[in-house]
Length: 521
Image 1 (cartoon, one colour):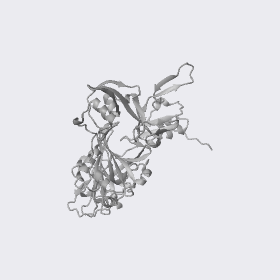
Image 2 (tube, rainbow, N blue to C red):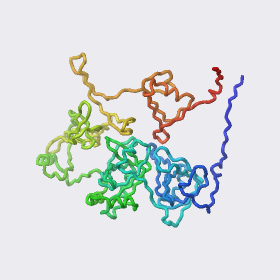
Image 3 (cartoon, rainbow, N blue to C red):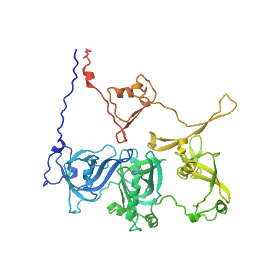
Image 4 (spheres, rainbow, N blue to C red):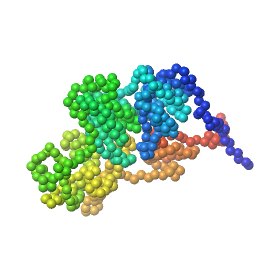
């Protein structure tokens, strides 16, 4: 018997398939963005590049994913346009923010369902190697420079948990210092600021990584009028919730503007009622951590005298040269603290309470703390250091004694937490002493390949799919190992390391075609 494998016929496009797109008549009248559709490919548009940025993959050494833009036409309609990384270099020196262009030979596709840049438009544009861009030298100012769809601060809780990007505008009322934070990609700069909208609502904003330098540059450019309030606009931000508070963080598509001339910005300046607070923040700058002045150098005896007499309390930063005799660990090396005041919280059977803030703490944080026995030529005392300084003094990462984890479910998805070892005691033992064990409060779970899981019956299964399955029936085997649907969790990761909600199921139709036909009549 001879087996013959049937291969379905596949039509292969010619090499110049992408070059055979219809040539656009240059005399053709431009089409408005609201009239575009995916049913044709001979469109011609006249638009202004409102904003342009490079979308980078932070998980792969900031590799270029695409160059993206927001385009605006004469009707003030906007649309998201994207240029793939393979052809982005063709347009790098052509497309400039604020310029007007006529664009032809582009594809009109469906807008992204997850994290769309322009949410109100159901379509987006894709540029390729055949796309033609021509700059219009005469700017008649008919096309606006910016179009924003702002979200009120009071509506931000409704944006949390959704796959949307949010545009916000507000007067800056507080500006923090430049701090370094540890992420899975290494240490990055962050800046925290507070914005107030036209209704008087406040929100906390965190600017991450390269956007810190962009924000610093925008602040320098707006320094010419120091008495004017700093109206900050952030586009395509992510709404997050941490410790029961709504906040905003920059995303890979965020653009930052300070005091640009638009109607919303001017109305916000006129409505602000506290010019003194405005002036204080408007003239401030982003600062690094405090730099110690060598003129403030003190001996241990002088520091103890200041602490005893409570003199010179205006300046509480000093420089002291001393020798560390010992690191004292009798009081532990960490404590559970309040995220607001950093004080130690008291633990009851069901909740944490901060006595300094006089309120319950739902999500306390772990703070590292070391007591140092130090001495100089004048005296000796105990210095207490915290967090990063404690790691530098001990010459080790204190994370070696705790677990850094990422929350995958619940109301704090994506938050990083530190799990320290805790003391466990057992009173109902048969021994004449109390057994105390210090260990991590976690349970061990095991992993196995899908093929190895055949025949297993498990109560809880977590299915990790960094890529779709590749064999017939493989997905069915994986999801059918669990005895109840409530015990099944699936994590699907796309190529850009973002979470997805769908995956492919591989089915060979030939298997079913060869089955004999059964007649149950």
